[in-house]
Image (spheres, rainbow, N blue to C red):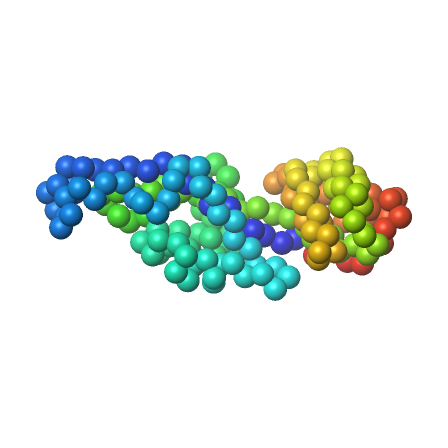
Amino acid sequence: MQHKCKVTVLEKKCFNDYQEKYLADPKSGPCPFYNVGDEFVFERYGGDDTFWRTGNGTQCSEAWDCISRYVYTALQGGSIMNGWTNDERMMIACCNDGTRPVIFKIERLDYKVVKIEGMACEKCAAKVQNALAQINGVTGVEVKLDKNWAEVCCDKEAAPADSDLTAAVEALGYTVTGID
């Protein structure tokens, strides 16, 4: 099983009275970096490591300081906040800017990588995506034709069996060379 982490901006607050009383620029306004609905997906698989790149200057440093530990935990497959939230794979957190905080939802996404030989075009990828999406416990499929694999998102209660994933792909005439 592999893991990604999705961070979604849920809300932005602005405390004008605090800004007027305490800031050098009393009209700073709300956070200019994020917008409600922004989504960021972090991953560390197959040579991609967006945790280190994204956390290295492309996120607001105040926000990154507050959420990076949860993102890192999710990428390792850990419980983000066991016993605190109703789903241990999720956390609600905010940046530490006291005059214009941003509220984030941080989610661990569990998935399997099905490595496939024989896909040659987008039609092949679409057939594989459709076949895998029909399996119980699959909540989403993204076929990466350029990497010869499919990322299969799994239900938190019941991940699909590797044998079911293999059977679905091989029934189409392709070969599964491994599942991570």
